[in-house]
Length: 149
Image (tube, rainbow, N blue to C red; front, side):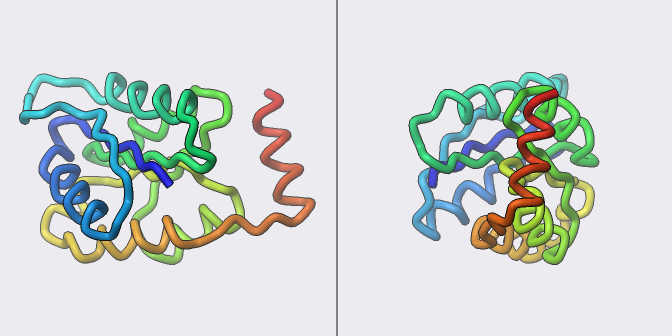
């Protein structure tokens, strides 16, 4: 599984921390964010980079993880792309539900919640990455409905 990550200035330090964490767990990581902190950057640029790379990836199960202040802007931008199912997540149970029920392929994290709690961020990311999608007819049908719009 290849994981594409990105953030605006608000989530830059969390993105950098997460990249190290993911690599230590054996994941392949592609950082689509800035290389240095830029307080004037804009979240749509990084969400677009991440999902564009995901959609063109030859990986069978590419995933994206995005950070901004609330997570909402990143999710809104990512969800403009067909085939992307971005979810704003703030706890482990929501991470599992987003994967199991809706086959979320982009995780949008609110930086303001995890500045002082990197362990909680790591727990959420691990739960999201390890939870499989429940391939039952009603869930598959709903995803196809979303992609047909």
